[in-house]
Amino acid sequence: MFCARHVFRCFKWLERAGDRVTGAAGPYFVGLAVILQAIGVASFFTVIQPSLPLRWLTTPPCVLIALNLFTHYYYVCTVPPGFVQGEVLQPGSGRLWASPSQRPSAGARWSNHGITLLTASNTMCRRCGFMRPERAHHCRICGRCVMKYDHHCPLPAGINQCVGLNNERHFVLFMAYLVLSTFFLSILGYSQALEAVGLTYSNDWPYMVPELAYILTYMLSVVICIAVLIMLCWHLWGIARGETTVEAQDHEIYKRVAKDRGDNFVNSFDLGMSTNLRLFFNIGPDGYPWYTLVLPLRIMPYTDGRSWARREGFQRHQGIQEGEELTDDDYDDDNA
Image (cartoon, rainbow, N blue to C red; front, side, top):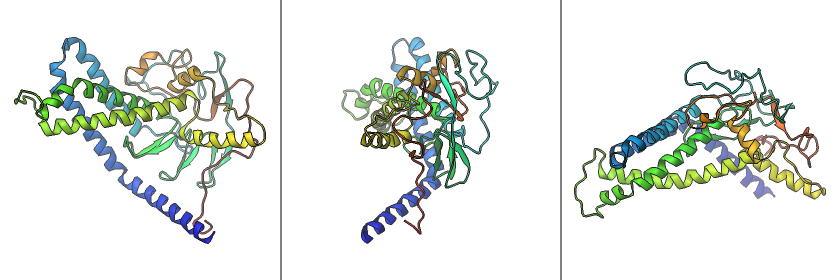
Protein backbone atom coordinates (compact mmCIF):
# COMPACT_ATOMS: atom_id res chain seq x y z
CA MET A 1 0.00 0.00 0.00
CA PHE A 2 2.88 2.34 0.90
CA CYS A 3 4.65 1.55 -2.38
CA ALA A 4 1.48 2.02 -4.46
CA ARG A 5 0.88 5.40 -2.83
CA HIS A 6 4.38 6.62 -3.73
CA VAL A 7 4.04 5.31 -7.28
CA PHE A 8 0.76 7.18 -7.60
CA ARG A 9 2.34 10.40 -6.34
CA CYS A 10 5.21 9.93 -8.78
CA PHE A 11 2.83 9.62 -11.70
CA LYS A 12 0.90 12.70 -10.56
CA TRP A 13 4.18 14.65 -10.43
CA LEU A 14 5.09 13.49 -13.93
CA GLU A 15 1.62 14.45 -15.16
CA ARG A 16 1.91 17.98 -13.76
CA ALA A 17 5.45 18.33 -15.09
CA GLY A 18 4.12 17.33 -18.50
CA ASP A 19 1.44 20.01 -18.19
CA ARG A 20 4.05 22.66 -17.48
CA VAL A 21 6.23 21.58 -20.40
CA THR A 22 3.21 21.45 -22.70
CA GLY A 23 2.11 24.95 -21.70
CA ALA A 24 5.60 26.40 -22.16
CA ALA A 25 6.18 24.71 -25.53
CA GLY A 26 2.72 25.57 -26.92
CA PRO A 27 3.79 28.63 -28.98
CA TYR A 28 6.57 26.59 -30.61
CA PHE A 29 4.05 23.92 -31.59
CA VAL A 30 1.91 26.60 -33.23
CA GLY A 31 4.89 27.93 -35.17
CA LEU A 32 5.84 24.43 -36.30
CA ALA A 33 2.26 23.72 -37.40
CA VAL A 34 2.13 26.94 -39.47
CA ILE A 35 5.46 26.13 -41.14
CA LEU A 36 4.40 22.58 -42.02
CA GLN A 37 1.08 23.74 -43.44
CA ALA A 38 2.81 26.41 -45.52
CA ILE A 39 5.35 23.91 -46.89
CA GLY A 40 2.57 21.46 -47.75
CA VAL A 41 0.49 24.07 -49.58
CA ALA A 42 3.56 25.39 -51.42
CA SER A 43 4.50 21.85 -52.48
CA PHE A 44 1.00 21.20 -53.79
CA PHE A 45 0.62 24.40 -55.81
CA THR A 46 4.15 24.37 -57.25
CA VAL A 47 4.56 20.65 -57.96
CA ILE A 48 1.13 19.00 -58.26
CA GLN A 49 -1.36 21.67 -59.29
CA PRO A 50 0.40 22.65 -62.57
CA SER A 51 0.04 19.06 -63.81
CA LEU A 52 -3.67 18.71 -63.02
CA PRO A 53 -6.09 18.39 -65.95
CA LEU A 54 -8.67 21.14 -66.51
CA ARG A 55 -6.81 23.56 -64.27
CA TRP A 56 -9.53 26.17 -64.66
CA LEU A 57 -11.93 23.69 -63.04
CA THR A 58 -9.68 21.98 -60.47
CA THR A 59 -7.82 25.02 -59.15
CA PRO A 60 -10.76 26.79 -57.38
CA PRO A 61 -11.62 23.78 -55.16
CA CYS A 62 -7.94 23.39 -54.27
CA VAL A 63 -7.71 27.06 -53.31
CA LEU A 64 -10.91 26.78 -51.26
CA ILE A 65 -9.56 23.78 -49.33
CA ALA A 66 -6.29 25.61 -48.59
CA LEU A 67 -8.21 28.73 -47.53
CA ASN A 68 -10.40 26.71 -45.15
CA LEU A 69 -7.33 24.95 -43.76
CA PHE A 70 -5.51 28.15 -42.84
CA THR A 71 -8.60 30.09 -41.75
CA HIS A 72 -10.03 27.45 -39.41
CA TYR A 73 -6.57 26.92 -37.94
CA TYR A 74 -6.36 30.65 -37.27
CA TYR A 75 -9.83 30.62 -35.69
CA VAL A 76 -9.18 27.63 -33.45
CA CYS A 77 -5.93 29.22 -32.21
CA THR A 78 -7.31 32.72 -31.61
CA VAL A 79 -11.00 32.34 -30.69
CA PRO A 80 -11.30 31.94 -26.88
CA PRO A 81 -12.70 28.48 -26.09
CA GLY A 82 -15.35 29.88 -23.73
CA PHE A 83 -13.93 30.52 -20.28
CA VAL A 84 -16.60 30.55 -17.58
CA GLN A 85 -15.28 33.82 -16.17
CA GLY A 86 -14.39 35.26 -19.57
CA GLU A 87 -16.27 37.62 -21.86
CA VAL A 88 -19.37 36.21 -23.55
CA LEU A 89 -18.86 35.65 -27.26
CA GLN A 90 -20.80 38.16 -29.32
CA PRO A 91 -21.68 37.82 -33.03
CA GLY A 92 -19.68 40.02 -35.36
CA SER A 93 -20.88 42.01 -38.33
CA GLY A 94 -17.86 41.88 -40.63
CA ARG A 95 -17.45 39.99 -43.88
CA LEU A 96 -15.95 37.01 -42.08
CA TRP A 97 -19.18 36.44 -40.14
CA ALA A 98 -22.04 34.47 -41.67
CA SER A 99 -25.64 35.63 -41.31
CA PRO A 100 -27.98 33.21 -39.50
CA SER A 101 -31.02 31.77 -41.23
CA GLN A 102 -33.13 33.69 -38.71
CA ARG A 103 -32.08 36.49 -36.38
CA PRO A 104 -31.48 34.72 -33.05
CA SER A 105 -32.39 36.09 -29.66
CA ALA A 106 -29.80 36.54 -26.93
CA GLY A 107 -28.53 33.46 -25.14
CA ALA A 108 -29.84 30.08 -26.22
CA ARG A 109 -31.14 29.40 -29.70
CA TRP A 110 -33.03 26.52 -31.31
CA SER A 111 -35.99 27.05 -28.99
CA ASN A 112 -38.37 25.82 -31.68
CA HIS A 113 -38.53 22.85 -34.05
CA GLY A 114 -38.98 20.24 -31.30
CA ILE A 115 -35.72 20.96 -29.47
CA THR A 116 -35.93 21.69 -25.75
CA LEU A 117 -33.36 24.02 -24.22
CA LEU A 118 -33.06 23.91 -20.43
CA THR A 119 -31.00 26.09 -18.14
CA ALA A 120 -27.90 24.24 -16.96
CA SER A 121 -27.33 23.54 -13.29
CA ASN A 122 -24.29 25.12 -11.65
CA THR A 123 -21.61 23.69 -9.39
CA MET A 124 -18.55 25.24 -7.80
CA CYS A 125 -15.12 24.35 -9.16
CA ARG A 126 -12.92 23.10 -6.32
CA ARG A 127 -9.82 24.37 -8.06
CA CYS A 128 -10.59 27.95 -9.09
CA GLY A 129 -13.54 28.53 -6.73
CA PHE A 130 -15.96 29.87 -9.37
CA MET A 131 -19.46 28.67 -10.16
CA ARG A 132 -19.67 26.91 -13.51
CA PRO A 133 -22.51 25.43 -15.58
CA GLU A 134 -22.94 21.82 -16.62
CA ARG A 135 -20.45 20.47 -19.16
CA ALA A 136 -17.75 22.92 -17.99
CA HIS A 137 -14.44 21.50 -16.76
CA HIS A 138 -11.26 22.91 -15.32
CA CYS A 139 -8.16 22.89 -17.52
CA ARG A 140 -4.97 22.24 -15.55
CA ILE A 141 -2.78 23.94 -18.17
CA CYS A 142 -4.87 27.09 -18.59
CA GLY A 143 -5.87 27.15 -14.92
CA ARG A 144 -9.46 28.13 -15.79
CA CYS A 145 -12.84 26.48 -16.30
CA VAL A 146 -13.95 26.08 -19.92
CA MET A 147 -17.56 25.66 -21.03
CA LYS A 148 -18.15 22.39 -22.86
CA TYR A 149 -14.51 21.51 -22.33
CA ASP A 150 -13.23 18.83 -24.69
CA HIS A 151 -9.44 18.85 -24.23
CA HIS A 152 -6.36 21.06 -24.20
CA CYS A 153 -4.62 20.69 -27.53
CA PRO A 154 -0.87 21.31 -27.80
CA LEU A 155 -0.37 18.34 -30.16
CA PRO A 156 -0.81 17.06 -32.81
CA ALA A 157 -2.76 20.02 -34.19
CA GLY A 158 -0.67 22.50 -32.21
CA ILE A 159 -3.33 25.09 -31.35
CA ASN A 160 -1.90 25.88 -27.88
CA GLN A 161 -5.22 26.32 -26.09
CA CYS A 162 -8.34 24.49 -24.99
CA VAL A 163 -11.00 23.19 -27.34
CA GLY A 164 -14.35 24.27 -25.94
CA LEU A 165 -17.75 25.71 -26.74
CA ASN A 166 -16.64 28.62 -28.93
CA ASN A 167 -13.88 27.01 -31.00
CA GLU A 168 -14.70 23.29 -31.13
CA ARG A 169 -16.49 23.67 -34.48
CA HIS A 170 -13.40 25.31 -35.98
CA PHE A 171 -11.25 22.50 -34.54
CA VAL A 172 -13.32 19.79 -36.21
CA LEU A 173 -13.48 21.66 -39.53
CA PHE A 174 -9.73 22.26 -39.40
CA MET A 175 -9.17 18.53 -38.98
CA ALA A 176 -11.59 17.81 -41.84
CA TYR A 177 -9.80 20.15 -44.24
CA LEU A 178 -6.41 18.91 -43.05
CA VAL A 179 -7.47 15.38 -43.95
CA LEU A 180 -8.78 16.55 -47.34
CA SER A 181 -5.64 18.49 -48.18
CA THR A 182 -3.21 15.74 -47.17
CA PHE A 183 -5.36 13.11 -48.91
CA PHE A 184 -5.31 14.95 -52.23
CA LEU A 185 -1.60 15.68 -51.89
CA SER A 186 -0.95 11.98 -51.22
CA ILE A 187 -3.10 10.75 -54.12
CA LEU A 188 -2.38 13.39 -56.75
CA GLY A 189 1.31 13.73 -55.87
CA TYR A 190 2.14 10.03 -56.09
CA SER A 191 3.82 10.20 -59.51
CA GLN A 192 5.92 13.23 -58.49
CA ALA A 193 7.02 11.36 -55.35
CA LEU A 194 8.25 8.46 -57.47
CA GLU A 195 10.03 10.93 -59.72
CA ALA A 196 11.66 12.64 -56.74
CA VAL A 197 13.11 9.37 -55.39
CA GLY A 198 14.40 8.41 -58.85
CA LEU A 199 12.02 5.55 -59.64
CA THR A 200 11.11 6.93 -63.06
CA TYR A 201 13.03 7.34 -66.29
CA SER A 202 13.05 11.10 -65.97
CA ASN A 203 16.09 12.69 -64.31
CA ASP A 204 14.74 16.20 -64.61
CA TRP A 205 13.13 17.90 -61.60
CA PRO A 206 11.72 21.16 -62.96
CA TYR A 207 9.98 22.31 -59.78
CA MET A 208 10.90 25.08 -57.37
CA VAL A 209 10.55 22.84 -54.29
CA PRO A 210 13.70 20.72 -53.75
CA GLU A 211 13.29 16.98 -54.26
CA LEU A 212 14.21 16.08 -50.68
CA ALA A 213 11.76 18.64 -49.30
CA TYR A 214 8.99 17.25 -51.48
CA ILE A 215 9.72 13.65 -50.49
CA LEU A 216 9.62 14.52 -46.78
CA THR A 217 6.44 16.57 -47.28
CA TYR A 218 4.78 13.72 -49.15
CA MET A 219 5.67 11.13 -46.49
CA LEU A 220 4.49 13.42 -43.70
CA SER A 221 1.23 14.08 -45.55
CA VAL A 222 0.47 10.37 -45.76
CA VAL A 223 1.11 9.91 -42.04
CA ILE A 224 -0.89 13.01 -41.03
CA CYS A 225 -3.79 12.02 -43.28
CA ILE A 226 -4.15 8.64 -41.59
CA ALA A 227 -3.57 9.90 -38.03
CA VAL A 228 -5.86 12.94 -38.25
CA LEU A 229 -8.54 10.91 -40.06
CA ILE A 230 -8.70 8.59 -37.04
CA MET A 231 -8.95 11.60 -34.72
CA LEU A 232 -11.62 13.20 -36.89
CA CYS A 233 -13.72 10.03 -36.96
CA TRP A 234 -13.42 9.76 -33.17
CA HIS A 235 -14.57 13.35 -32.66
CA LEU A 236 -17.43 13.05 -35.15
CA TRP A 237 -18.57 9.85 -33.42
CA GLY A 238 -18.60 11.67 -30.09
CA ILE A 239 -20.49 14.61 -31.60
CA ALA A 240 -23.05 12.24 -33.10
CA ARG A 241 -23.57 10.77 -29.60
CA GLY A 242 -23.90 14.19 -27.97
CA GLU A 243 -20.78 14.01 -25.82
CA THR A 244 -17.31 15.54 -25.58
CA THR A 245 -14.06 13.61 -25.11
CA VAL A 246 -14.19 14.15 -21.35
CA GLU A 247 -17.88 13.22 -21.17
CA ALA A 248 -17.27 10.03 -23.15
CA GLN A 249 -14.94 8.84 -20.37
CA ASP A 250 -17.40 9.90 -17.67
CA HIS A 251 -20.30 8.17 -19.40
CA GLU A 252 -18.48 4.84 -19.41
CA ILE A 253 -18.28 5.08 -15.61
CA TYR A 254 -21.93 6.16 -15.38
CA LYS A 255 -22.95 3.10 -17.39
CA ARG A 256 -21.23 0.78 -14.92
CA VAL A 257 -22.74 2.61 -11.95
CA ALA A 258 -26.23 2.39 -13.45
CA LYS A 259 -25.75 -1.26 -14.40
CA ASP A 260 -24.70 -2.18 -10.85
CA ARG A 261 -28.03 -0.88 -9.53
CA GLY A 262 -30.03 -2.53 -12.31
CA ASP A 263 -30.64 0.64 -14.29
CA ASN A 264 -29.65 1.92 -17.73
CA PHE A 265 -27.67 5.09 -18.31
CA VAL A 266 -29.16 7.53 -20.83
CA ASN A 267 -27.28 10.63 -21.95
CA SER A 268 -29.80 13.46 -21.77
CA PHE A 269 -27.73 15.51 -24.25
CA ASP A 270 -28.06 12.84 -26.95
CA LEU A 271 -30.91 13.91 -29.25
CA GLY A 272 -30.06 11.51 -32.06
CA MET A 273 -27.22 11.48 -34.54
CA SER A 274 -28.72 13.90 -37.08
CA THR A 275 -29.87 16.46 -34.51
CA ASN A 276 -26.61 16.28 -32.58
CA LEU A 277 -24.61 17.02 -35.73
CA ARG A 278 -26.92 19.88 -36.75
CA LEU A 279 -26.65 21.44 -33.30
CA PHE A 280 -22.88 21.09 -33.19
CA PHE A 281 -22.36 22.72 -36.59
CA ASN A 282 -25.36 25.00 -35.92
CA ILE A 283 -26.91 24.27 -39.31
CA GLY A 284 -30.66 24.48 -39.75
CA PRO A 285 -33.73 26.70 -39.53
CA ASP A 286 -32.66 28.28 -36.24
CA GLY A 287 -28.98 28.14 -37.11
CA TYR A 288 -26.90 29.02 -40.15
CA PRO A 289 -26.97 28.00 -43.83
CA TRP A 290 -25.20 24.85 -44.98
CA TYR A 291 -22.60 26.79 -46.96
CA THR A 292 -20.89 27.74 -43.67
CA LEU A 293 -19.39 24.24 -43.80
CA VAL A 294 -17.70 25.08 -47.12
CA LEU A 295 -16.84 28.76 -46.73
CA PRO A 296 -14.45 29.74 -43.88
CA LEU A 297 -16.90 31.98 -42.04
CA ARG A 298 -17.36 32.65 -38.33
CA ILE A 299 -20.65 31.66 -36.71
CA MET A 300 -22.04 31.53 -33.19
CA PRO A 301 -22.57 28.24 -31.32
CA TYR A 302 -26.19 27.19 -30.83
CA THR A 303 -26.06 28.10 -27.14
CA ASP A 304 -24.25 30.44 -24.78
CA GLY A 305 -23.10 27.48 -22.67
CA ARG A 306 -25.56 28.10 -19.84
CA SER A 307 -28.50 26.32 -21.48
CA TRP A 308 -28.39 22.97 -23.25
CA ALA A 309 -30.61 20.98 -25.55
CA ARG A 310 -31.91 17.86 -23.81
CA ARG A 311 -34.06 14.92 -24.68
CA GLU A 312 -37.75 15.54 -24.33
CA GLY A 313 -38.82 14.84 -20.76
CA PHE A 314 -35.26 14.70 -19.38
CA GLN A 315 -34.02 17.11 -16.73
CA ARG A 316 -30.80 15.16 -16.16
CA HIS A 317 -29.07 11.94 -17.20
CA GLN A 318 -30.97 8.74 -16.50
CA GLY A 319 -29.23 6.10 -14.40
CA ILE A 320 -27.21 8.35 -12.07
CA GLN A 321 -28.45 10.17 -9.04
CA GLU A 322 -27.83 13.74 -8.00
CA GLY A 323 -24.38 14.07 -6.48
CA GLU A 324 -22.94 11.13 -8.41
CA GLU A 325 -21.73 13.26 -11.31
CA LEU A 326 -17.97 13.18 -11.73
CA THR A 327 -15.97 16.35 -11.18
CA ASP A 328 -12.42 17.27 -12.13
CA ASP A 329 -9.67 15.52 -10.20
CA ASP A 330 -8.77 17.52 -7.14
CA TYR A 331 -5.66 15.90 -5.71
CA ASP A 332 -3.50 17.63 -3.16
CA ASP A 333 0.18 16.76 -3.19
CA ASP A 334 0.19 16.68 0.59
CA ASN A 335 -2.74 14.28 0.79
CA ALA A 336 -2.13 12.11 -2.27
